[in-house]
Amino acid sequence: MSKLLPNLPIEDLTLENDYIGIIEKGTLLKSFFLTNKHEFSQIKIFSIYGEWGSGKSTLMKYLDKELKGTFNTFFFESWEFESDNNLALSLLEFLISKTDSKTDKLLKNGKNLLDGFSKAVTLKTPIANLNMSEVDKNINKESFLERKKQFKKDFRGWEKKITIKDKSPDYNIVFIDDLDRCEPENILNLLSAMKLFFTYGKKTIFLCGIDKKAIREAVKTKYGEIVKANEYLEKIFDISFSMPETVNSNKLVNSYFDDNEKVGEENLGDLISNFFEELHFKNPRRIKKILNKYLIIKRLKESEDSGTLFETYLTLYLLILNEFEPESFSLLFNLSIKRTNYIESLKKSNNTEQEIKNISNGDLLNYFKEDSLNSF
Image 1 (cartoon, rainbow, N blue to C red):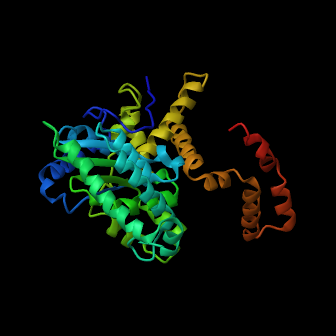
Image 2: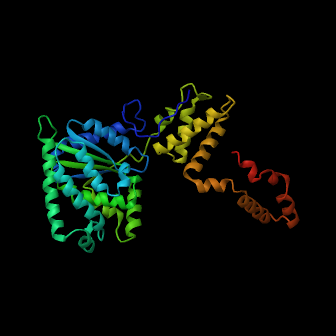
Image 3: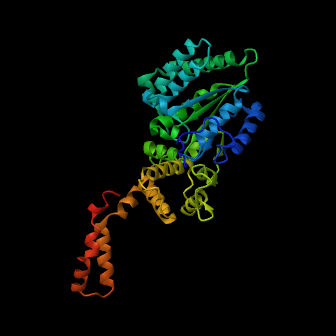
C-alpha cells in the first residue's frame, strides 16, 4: 500500500531513508571538519547553500550527529526564536543554556552589547557597519568599545570552560538552521553580529544553512541596490559548500509506492519519477508535498479503480500548479479568458460575425461554465 512521508527533515538518516544522497555529501563535510581543526582560529563561519526544501536541514542534522563527541555541537533553529526580534541575543542565550558553566557576566554584557548593536547596525558596504548616530542614542561610544572588549574576553572564557574538561572536545560547532524562514531584518542582523562578535572566539565555528535567494531578497528589501548580495555573502562566510544541484529523486518517489503498483510491466513509482524529471520538478520537499496530497486524494476516492496513467499525470500536474504556480492554475480555469481567446481565433479563421456568434453561444461552451468546475 502507498504510504505518506513526513514533510520534515530526517532526524535519523540511514541508507534506507536517504532519498537524495545526503550521506555522501555529509561524509565529505565530516571529513573536512575533522581534518582542518588547526585552521579554525582564523576560519570560523561556513555556509551550505541550497534552495528551500533541498535537504539542508537533514544534512546539518546528520553532521550534528556524526560530529558530536569530537565537537561540542549546538543546533540553533533560528525560526523558533524569531519572535524575540534579536536573533543574535537569542543565539547567545541558547549557547549558554546548553552548557553547565556559570556565565552570568557573559549574558549580562552580551545583552547590553547586542541590544545596542541591533538598533545601530547598518550596511553601507558589504561589511556590516555601525550607524554612530544610533550608537549615540543607544550606547555611549566609549562604553560600546569596552563592551566589545569585555564580550571578547567573556566569550573566550565560556569556550575555555566547556573545552578543557576531561574528555571534552577541543572545539564547538554551531549549526544555524531555518534562516530562510526569518524576516529580512532578523536574518541580516544575526549574520552581521556573528561576523562582528561571535568570531572573537578561538574554538567555535558556525555552519549556516542558507538559501541564496532568501538572502538576496533580504538585502534588497532592506538596502535596495546599495549592496550586492553576493558580495555580502562572500564577506560573511569564509568557506561555502553547496547542496547537489542535480538530485536523483527516483528513490524518494519510489518510497511512496509498493513494488506491486505497476502500469503494464513498469513500476508506477518509476513512471512518476520520469514524469517529474520531464517537468524539472526535483525539489525533495516539494515532491513530498505533492505526493502526499496525491495519495490523500487517491485514498478518498470511493472506487478502487485508480484511473489511467494519464489521469495520474494530470492530477499530479494540477497539484503542482495549484501549490507552486497558483497564477497559472487560476488561468487554467479562467473561462472568460478562454472564451476571449477562442473568439479571437475564430476571427482569424475568417468566420463571419454571425458564425462566430453562433459558435461562441453554442452548447459546448455553455456546458463549460465556471460553476461546473467548482467541485474540481
